Image 1 (cartoon, one colour):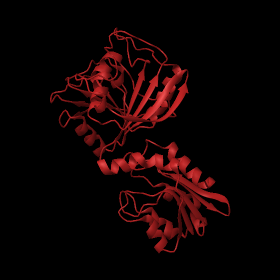
Image 2: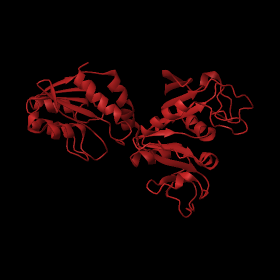
Image 3: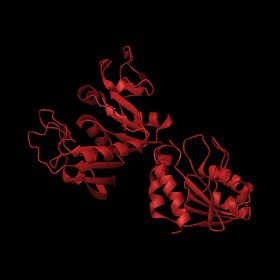
Length: 348
């Protein structure tokens, strides 16, 4: 593949999880085999990648080629169409990696009609970046990744609730990086009360996701660390209409629209959260799996056998299902991290 198109895809990849319900896009402008401008869409409502690259290139953009990870848009949204800006700039040719299935009117055709040479050079890597975006456009639901750290026999804790630490310190760092790629993290009220987690990336270099807690109770202990961040309020989605926020707790209350998790996800997507990771205990994890709301499953499996009665096995149901009704996932990749196995799976 063309090195400049690869660079554009790299830019888009690095910014996954920062653009809300908009796709992450990278753009590179080249003239006489020299990069004269590049850009990436950093945040929903701000300039798209193509516009940033054009601003950097300035008047040199005339007769240049722009390489874009996703087909330039052709509609007016929060920002004007990128295709029009490309036409107005005098760009000679456009090369893009992925056809934008969400466009009502083709940016490709708009550019061609203006006399610009347009080339679609498909990339499997780029396509993988946008599959979740196209899915969101159809379902109006966020893309949900369920993260599990477990033993070989499927336990996230011993029967005595001991869970620190099943997996290695290398896995912990990988999870922090994974958090930064998501708009928000969902956890349950019981997990917060028992584990007192921060659910941040613990790094100034990584973006912290919005933290969202689902609870049926009406308050939290005021000593819990997660609520003490003055700059980043935690969203608490409660079944209670009388939730009490204690002094010094930075909490934003949102009433659930019913107990169905799908309704919760609709609410979050409408609020701009497109990539969501679930880090929770077996009760909430099992509900997400049972309600078929898991798009991606990431399992960190330690080479340990915990045993016991399985009180904290990560997937639990009241009913015993026949094998013909079992939940099916497809293994996408496997990797060894610090002696533990990382498995990425997608819903079949």
